[in-house]
Length: 519
Image (cartoon, rainbow, N blue to C red; front, side, top):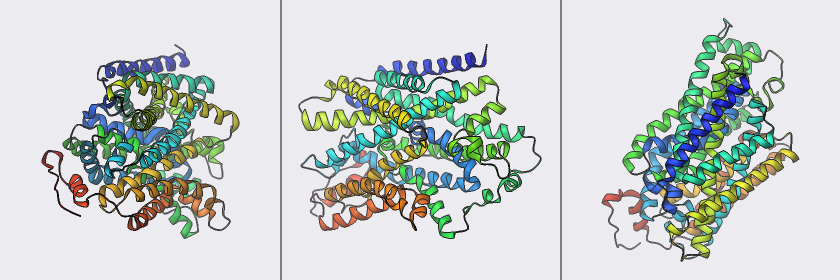
């Protein structure tokens, strides 16, 4: 068989497994709750792998490997930041969120917010659902764009056909099996990602001809690559860079695509087990991704050479170059499937999320409250198709209008937009009984607007602009949303009973008895 035939064969097997997962999952979809949160009966292995695969996406395999090649040892700050974010999320937030969302019988994030604040209007739900749809569609479009690029670069299949093939694959299995199919397929894809990433740098390291160590080799290329504390002579630039890299982990503290998985897990005990799976996955895969990039920089570039000229824009082609140089064709084909897994594991989850915002939060809760959950499964599937088509259209538009675009900048922008809008709201709703509905609305609006301001205004300023480019948009937008939410809540305090909310958050479901005290 030719190399191309081997790659296509492996890809067909991979797709066949995904379709089989969709068919098996479809047997569990009997209501809208099944379609969007798996009937809240998912096990810890599936939820942990799914949460991590969804949270990492193509950024892990293409973006983070490229970052390792570009910045060297300081890229490990991303690993530290993500590990801390995952730990805080699973250790301190997941149980409280699960407890509260179950009490409210919520199946979407806007559901949870509406019930938590006992909102008498649809303002909070509309804002939350609208922001979800906007940023999710942008994020899905970037993932579909990455799918087209992956097919083009790795299989020599034209971009448009690659994006369309990826679109059809994902749509079929989630159309059939909904959230269950997304989680099960994420688990399968997450396992592929885990073993592929962890084993590759070990194999490459022992196959290298160079007698020099990694640190010595990097120093020969560029001594700044071994400086963990940053590569600039400007101390403040290094501080902002370290913060920008490590604060990516903030996105795990309440992002809807991750937290809907905590809704779906069957019990709080499963969260305790899933925590260790998620932490191990994050530590090993993230560290391996940065290491692959570093090894690629050593192997394929020399002193004074531009890494982007050899390894692609932002060195995003380093993984493909390394695998093609060291692995036999069948393993290269498996890595192509792993790259597609990383991308598709995010697309499926985000499409389900956008569909839930349209079906549950707009159509049912606002316009057709008379429709029962079990009657909306068909509407849910239609909404999923519409969101997918919209994202595909945006991806192809970006490809034609901006051929020199930096795809992973767009990915981080979409990720940061979702995180800055929702994470501060989730955090304060779980830990501060004085947080009000008006405060939550102000937080979401502030997070949304700040993303735009820090990206398109502050980063363009002459003196401070480079520092905000290094810091990126998530950390400052996150901070603004928290501060605005705090002060607005102080001005407009909550009307619900503080004791009731506090007990919901602190008492396990099986022991909960709501009090009737006064605030």
